[in-house]
Every structure is written in C-alpha cells, then in structure tokens.
Image 1 (tube, each protein chain N blue to C red):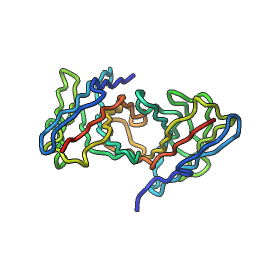
Image 2 (image 1 turned 135 degrees about the vertical axis):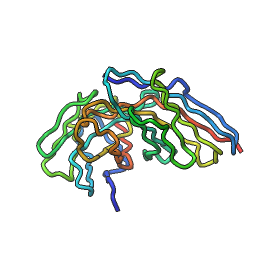
Image 3 (image 1 turned 180 degrees about the vertical axis):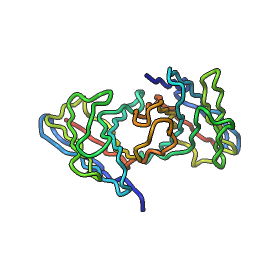
Image 4 (image 1 turned 180 degrees about the horizontal axis):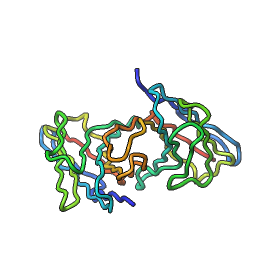
Length: 115
Length: 117
C-alpha cells in the first residue's frame, strides 16, 4: 500500500519568492510515479508535474520543479517566482507498480501568496 | 477538446432520495474512477473501473454504486444518500497502462458539490 504525507496544512509566501511544499511517501513497490496537482478555489484539479521513481533527473515544468530524493522518500514541489494566481491547495499523489493501481493522495497544503 | 464532464455540478438533496452523478469522458480512456474530497482528508477513491463491465471498490465504497456499460460513461449512484456523504466528488479518467508505465496523466472532471440534508 502507498501512503503520502504532507505535513504543512498551510503556507504563506511573498509574491516573486520561491516556495517549497513538502511531500514524503511510503511504498514497498520497487517502482512508482509521483504527481503534484493544484486545486484553485474554483475546485478543479490541475495536473502540474510528474516524477518517475527511476528518472535520473528531477522533473521541471516551467516554474514548477520537483525535488526528488529517493533515499529519503521525499518529492517536494518547488514553485519559483510565486504569483498571486498560485494561491491554491496543492496535492501530492503517487501510484504504484501496477499501472492500474489508484492514485493515492496526501491531505494537501494550502498555499497563500501575499502581494 | 479532451475533457471529463460531470453533472450536476452542484446538488442539494435530502436523506434517502436516490441520486445519480453522471461522468463522461471523450478521450477513449479505459480507466475511470470516482473520488470524494473532504476537508483535512484529501481525495479518497470510491470506485474504479478498468474497462467496460469491470468495476471494483476503492477505499471508501460504502453507500455508493457505479456502473460501466459504455466506455465513455461512469455514473456514480447513491441509492439512499446520508448527510455523511456530503462532499466534493471528482470523476477521473486515464488511459489504461501496462505495468511500469506510471506517467499517464489522470484527467479530472470539474467536481460535483453534494449537500445531503
């Protein structure tokens, strides 16, 4: 079974600053995928970034990067140059070795960007 | 446009009155699932389906039913809703993958906010 832990219920960041959202995971699967989703106040779930457990390099997508430390079982999301529109809930999720196992989510971190 | 649609988006009902939330995707995805989102608990999977006529329970299936008669549709049925089923519900779909292929993005519908009085 997989488990995702997000220890920060809420975070504040100044506009234009970088922020790191923490995510640790637990799994016995030898290979897995890690995902981050953004949920703005409107409610939809927006896919941000993906990291495979065997990927050699950390994933990046525009202002988003994933700081993947496999030995520590952490997959932190880094948002550079925060914008007011980044204010949202952020969920870390993972999926295990079988391609048809469900996506398991953490409880989320609410990020507030301050002008 | 590739999308997952859900209807209704908002619903207020009373205890015991059967309701159905529809979900449809236009991407020919094999895998579809339902989640509920509650404050402080994140998203939890209710049911999933790997293809037509193939459904299985997720983590919180009690009080829900699903069906998958067509590939594009995956309705969620609450036969006798109760107040503890007040929640935000998401339908999601993705292409079915073979073992070791995890990158397939899961597409989410816009969500259905349900209030059971």
